[in-house]
Length: 251
Ligand code: MF3
Ligand code: CO
Image 1 (cartoon, rainbow, N blue to C red):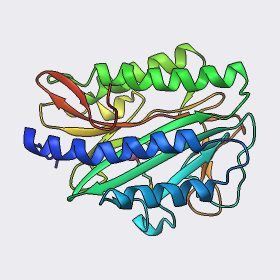
Image 2: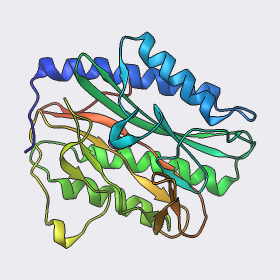
Image 3: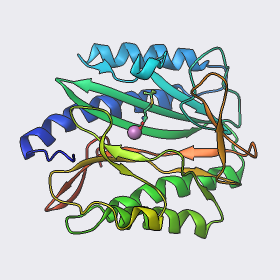
């Protein structure tokens, strides 16, 4: 069931989303050569709690850390640990927080030092994919319109669109109906019709090479089949009669 949020509830989600946004800003400033991913995790966990919020990923289905840090060929759900970030890496940070019972969820891919031009382009296009998708998030459109916009933009650049993981509804739970895929499939049909008050996380995961991925034996980390880099960009948004409203990004 897709839950519809009132304008007051969307305002509460914006407050949760703001904690996520600020956490990501801090992580972006920290993503420098020499820093370990577990240091990123600790800083994010401390920051979220300092705002009176709770990191939603910790213990989610047994997930052991408070954020996900996915480096280079890691697509999503990388577990922070002893890995030391080095020049030329791209680091996807995914953050979720609960504030007063409401969830925010967002991700960014950060560039570290001298990243090659083709990988920079991948990161730029992945962010663009999100915004192309978001433009379609208006009442009367369907989920398929979001998916088509994302897939078209990514494939125009020759990139692979990950299919095994998708965006999602969000609200009092991190994962609510509906699923929000980044690709069109006739088996999905047009998908749910969008109405004002839906809140969703749109999160393109885009690969430089093949779209194929697999999971590592840690049970979480998703990596590209060909070992080429992958980028991730996510925001929580609300669908409103005045157009899409970003809940994890202030612009
Ligand atoms: N941000 C991820 C999502 O959108 C959630 C991370 S999975 C977790 O689904 F286990 F780390 F929580
Ligand atoms: Co998400």
